[in-house]
Length: 291
Image 1 (tube, rainbow, N blue to C red):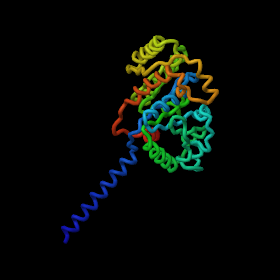
Image 2: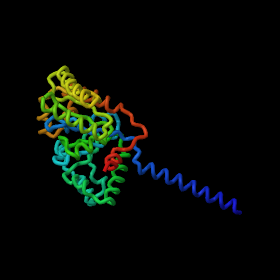
Image 3: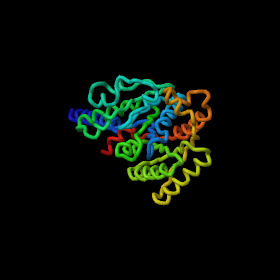
Image 4: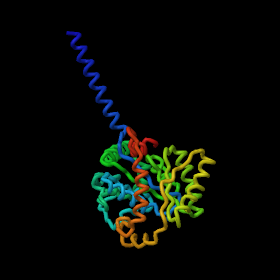
């Protein structure tokens, strides 16, 4: 009788252990979703358009894509698309709606998480609310194959927090000397914050040669002073039609007359989406885990 009771206690103990392990795995935010933070050392380099182009392109490969607008000062993805969302992230943070109510449909089958200046409140949340937000965001992430994060420009704390916690920090720069200096400053901070992969797009180039030479200047500085390289994933030529499509609130690469830009974006998306991170933590678990 005592032996039977002992066996029951051991069985119960083992079941409790298995349940706890499963809970720990869920709480750890294990995710197959790949996160790409599109960022830049300065504004005006085409960062938001590139984030949008990549999201639409990856979604065309039958992937579930969420584009998160994480620009605290100038959330504008929905404006570029002519979308007037009923809710944004600040409404969710305030508890006025569920996270699923914030998401709206975008072009090409992507989902969009509209941003707002209310994201700044993340820095001042109590631990209970923070835990709830982390749990909800992590659950949301499990619904997607790719999370693209359009960060703000510059090297502010919120920008580098988002960029450094993504699987890939995708740095957008141009051939301008000021962009080179700002790009180097961004790389330095991201490596200091633990970024594992920094990819670079050189935008608004007159030729591929100019783009490669611009990247080489950046990479030479990075290797010399930071002892780690960055990766070139593509260059994008100057496209004079971009302002026209912005005014029309249309996605340029969805126009059949823009095959050249669309082809380059596809090549970049192929390099980024080919990355694998099996058994990794999700972006949001890393984001809050560093606090």
